[in-house]
Length: 324
Image (cartoon, rainbow, N blue to C red; front, side):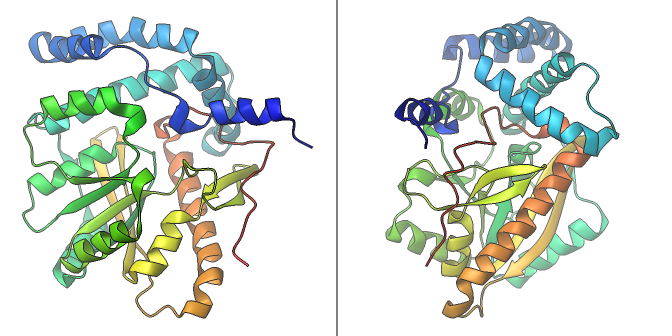
């Protein structure tokens, strides 16, 4: 039996309730340093800022350490030798990518290459004119990928996201942006009318991006408990339920940083165009397991680029709910 206190503690640790730290003025100061003084002065300032955040924010710190203990054996073949230092590196990578997000929308040249088969699949998807639903995650830097539409007139992105807990950063992003920003739809307000709007966008050949690695904001949101990195974790059914309603092609996309810079990986995932109503439940469960396998591989390859700084594995296991 879970106590009420445990429920309250869990609810206060939901990702949507973990608010941003710092003031907009402080964030703007960091942007000013980056633009006026360059990248190295910015990095020097970033270290104490991130170190302070690491010390005072115990929930993100503990979540990072738990994740790294689970993923590091898959990545390196052994447990992390010093999880505290590795976790601090995790935070520093996150801070560096925040500035890359600003750069991507403020007109700076920040190329994201699309190589070989990924480019061929993207070109084929665009030329089809059908649009589609694109499953993404919090691995890498999706804003860099979205900025690609600035260089391709035939590539149009609609992002479904929860923006309320990131109001400061989004205000900063809006002030900094000199590029054609993607259309953003607030995920906590999806209604039948919103679903119709998304269907219209896809019919126009647009690509609707939705992250499927965070549980719903509302308590009545359906989730499934799946094995992720060796332990049960709740994943949202919403993106996959939406896929059955939109009846369209599905893709996955990631934008990971390596020694050569950012690389966009675009792949086909499925197509629900001809999925029958009686098959939806079975398809949803199977598709969610394939998504978790894809997410696991992304994390294994670039473990410091999954930015979910909140308790992901919960003993409460409230996500074990399915359609009848």
